[in-house]
Image: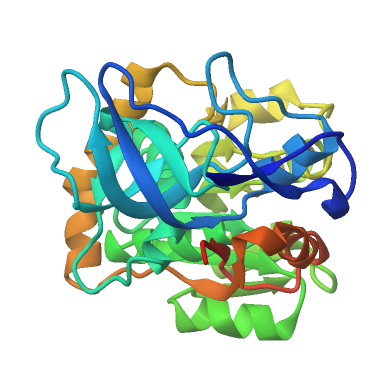
Length: 326
């Protein structure tokens, strides 16, 4: 088969579409013939040499895909060859075929195009596990999403609105904020021109955000704590703004607030399977009913993954950038 390889870490040109050995479905795994994958920030870090796959995972980038079941490994039940699926991966999505633990497989939702289903697994599992399973966002509460126009952000807006929460977002252009509003965002903050702490407090009568979903890390740590409401929960899922920040423990104590930080890729298979099962139970009905949808900015040929990485690094997109197998 063909897959994207990274002979040497570097810029987008380091991604090479090359012939590689076919994967084989092992015990408890399903072999998927890939139709599409999606670009995530973690793929860019891997390409740069900063985020190696966990032991035993494919060396090819790609944390999610959609396609058709091509073969079943020993011990797999509930799936059949030909099933249209999407999958959460530890790696290997930028390829024509990938072996996936059966517990990380999901059916393509009704009304969702097979290619566009590749935009779902990573973002839905990230948002559901952090915002709902850990931070326990409840109806009537306020969620602040940094990077509201990203793949994660566009899904977080929709899921939060679906459960009856109020949503604030930050983004860097008025057009991105307009698209966030179209998805249901209530409070629109241009982080280049406005202070998100004061804007969130103004919009919540001084209370602040009950839950914050943060992709920035160190750069926003102190201001996120300031923006939290009493009993607020900060969920950190990225470090685009650095890895070391100063935390005011007194403010955290006074607010009886909590800070969590998670990633999906290196979690044990049992934890990933539990998240995927929760997503299938709680989110898939919303997708089937059309209340939530994947947001796709554009589709590019998988062999041209370098161009897709440039698009994501320039941050001009809204939603996900897909890589489609010819």
